[in-house]
Amino acid sequence: MSIEIDDSAAEPRFGRIRRPWRWAVALVVLVGVVLVAIDLTLAGDVLLVTVDRPGEEAPRASLSDEQQSLLDELGNPDGFTIFFVDDGSESVRMETWSYYQAGREVSFVDGELSADESPEPAVVTRPTPFTPDLFTPFADLQQIVTATGVVEYLEYHVEDELLAGGTVHVAEQLMLGLKDGRLLYVEAVPLAEGG
Image (cartoon, rainbow, N blue to C red; front, side, top):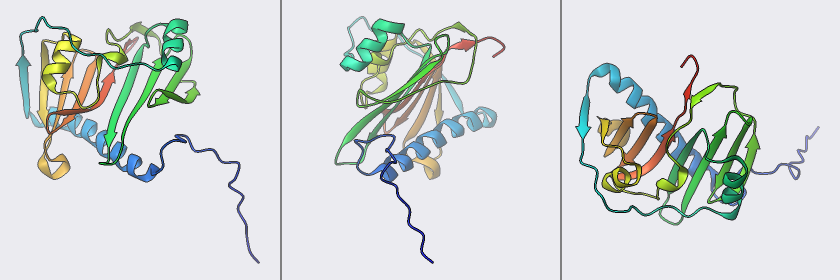
């Protein structure tokens, strides 16, 4: 007896990514950085950093037509996450924008729509003050400070065994993951009722 599986109807979630397992590994590492940051808060290995905000204009990321249409329709997202992944042969920007009031969570890969789903319900009392275009691929911390206007944040150094050169920076409604001083992960969160 043989079993045949017809997977011709299956659509990949991120159709343009040719090596999804590499991106999955990178995402697992980045999520691990976030979890380590939470764990480090209990360990006490935290540095409070205060910086002077520079007056220069920071570069902004370009938005695709699909992203701009969504902004025109719904405005800035209540919250969002961005992953920057580079495996040496190609760089990818993966984003998820959450609109809790509208009941939509929209994902993009390099600006192209990859998913449009319903998020877990939440009552947002204050959306994130940040916008996705503030975060350019692999930016350094000075560029991020200039773009966002964040002048105070907590800095966590990730143990080298977990992610060599990894740091997590946490400010009000914002978490950043950097490796060797370059931005890999952004999570801009809204304030929600009861949270």
